[in-house]
Amino acid sequence: MNRKTLVLPAVIGLLAPVLAACGGSDGGSGSGDPIVVGTTDRFIASKDAPAPVDPAYAYDVGTWNILRQTVQTLMIIPRGDGEPEPEAAEECGFTDTGNERYACKLRKDLKFANGDPVTANDVKFSIDRALSIQADSGVFALLSTIDTVETQGDRDVIFHLKTADATFPFKLSTPVAGIVNPDDYDKGKLRDGFSIDGSGPYTFKAEVKDDELVNAVFTKNPNYKGVLSIKNSQVEMRSFADADTMGDSLTKGDIDLMTRSMTPEQIKKLGGATDSNIDLIEMPGLEIRYLAFNTDDPSVKSAAVRQAMAQVINRGELVSKVYGTSADPLYSLVPATITGHSNSFFNKYGEPSVSKAKTLLEQADITTPVKLTLNYTTDHYGSVTADEFEQLKQQLNASGLFDVDIKGAPWETFRPAEQKGEYQVYGMGWFPDFPDADNYLAPFLDKDNFLGSPYANTEIRSTLIPESRREADRLTASKSITEIQDIVADDVPVLPLWQGKQYIAARDDITGAEWALNSSSTLQLWELGRGVSG
Image (cartoon, rainbow, N blue to C red):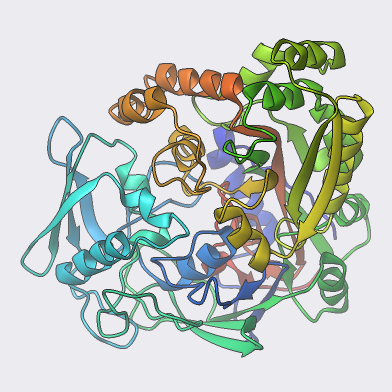
């Protein structure tokens, strides 16, 4: 059997019964065999990043997908997306009209996996810890609007915010706000290696080889109390060196399901099959890909150089030649399906034009061709990233205005080099921490941003971001959000390229695969069960 499912957020409630009928009942996990999930994400404990799965450090989709199974948060994004709902908390909400005081009450008799009680003091410890460590990953910035954390008794936690933040409930659903046990985590330093202890739906056991996680075992936590219905007793996650090896393992039945990252060729082949026992499920995605600039580097310090690149690059051609139907051109940092999206780059630059780019450079007295190196990671965003950068190189060099070279490096060296400002121009991807326009803007443009970018715009940081966060109605916030996007298109500290769809391929005896990823690429292993093949 082969089915291909497109889940549209606007009608997700209508689609759910149909999908359930295709997949089988929730009780399909009767087999004692663990469900085995494949990924090309790599998890390495290195000198520069010795604590990859500490909630106070982790800040990429792969490590967050481990933490979301194991470390519980006060809030959680519900099945099918939408507004966050209480998870470790029994109830949460703003207690003032200014969105500056947020109170939560923990569930009664909440416990860590080892049986220790989870208290309000543990929540305070976890939040204060992340803010005090201030890991160089920049993840602590998600909690930057917190002024103080107050506890009242064992179950009540009150967050006093520095400024209004209507997105705060979303931030409490992210792993950096995960609740950890003070007995296992030091307040003043990160926890090295791959040990994780929490109160989430699963416990975690890591198989590590040469400081790299090669296999992870998630076992149902008997002490878990929350909103999730766990449909299996155990899941294994295996990390593969490349998508082809992962795909071969799925075909042979060594794994039951594979997710990011599949190649466009794999997606096309699985989508066109009619007699396969592997199902391909297509879902809307909020992943974006972009170029970032070290605006202090002499080669790209002039905005004219960055603007000329924006004027030359042909996103449609790039997507068509490299990603086919699995991606769409993107003309803003904010994806097209997020409230507040504006096609700011298209509005400013229109169709690609070498003559307009030449004029920009001439008016700024920039000597051409401009010599640049575009850096990319070889192993973090999929195997075709090299093809993408080869295409970018060809487009820029064909203009005669640029002399571009490209250089790839594994993530474990690429990310530290980027953080140290060693690259002129570099390629990055973004999977949102939560589905709101704020999370596509502040992480790149605010103080203590994820990129460590030297670019600073006072209007964005001091006025527009705080202004947008005051609005509980995110449609009302669109005016400020649009202004931010327009400034980005003018200054080009980053250059958005494309927005991707997301896919899961699963053997046809696996149930719940259509719910195993949400639009933010959060892996929801608890949705998976085992039914009957065919």
